[in-house]
Amino acid sequence: MFIGEYQHNIDAKGRMIVPAKFREELGQAFVVTKGLDKCMTIYTLEEWKIFENKLKSLPTADAGVRRFQRFFIGGACECESDSQGRVLIPKNLIEYAEIEKDVISVGLSNRIEIWSRENWKEYNEESDFIDNDLAGKMAELGI
Image (cartoon, rainbow, N blue to C red):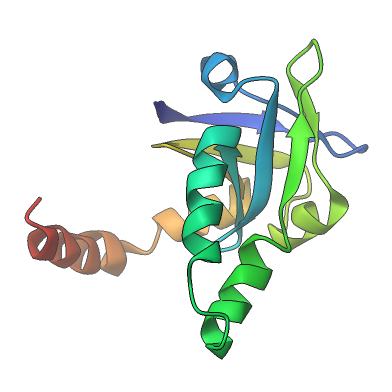
C-alpha cells in the first residue's frame, strides 16, 4: 500500500528518485502514465493489468471510451528503476505534468501520483473543494 507525501527533484535528464518508502512495493518495473488533474500516475505491473483490463473491456464504439483509452493507455510507458532508485521519466509525461524540477510524490493506496510542486500547491489551496466538494463526496459514499 502506498501512503504519504514526499518532496524531491527531477534532474535535467528527466530522472526522478522514487521515494524509498515506495520502492519495495513498486518493484523494479512499473507503469507511468498521464493522471487526472495534470499529474502522472505510477502503477505496479499488477495494478496496471487490472486497470488496463477494465479499460479494454469498455465499448470502443463509444467516442468517450476511445478518448479515455488513448489518454491512459496511449500515454503509458513501462519504466524501470536503477540501482539508486532513479527512474527515467519520458519527456512527454514530464511536459504533461508541467514538471520543471521540484516534484511531489503522493501515495494513494494502489498507485502513486507525481505532481509538480506548483500544481500540487495550487490543487491543495482549492479550499472550496476541500471544505465543500470533498465533504459532500464523502457523505455520498458513506465515509
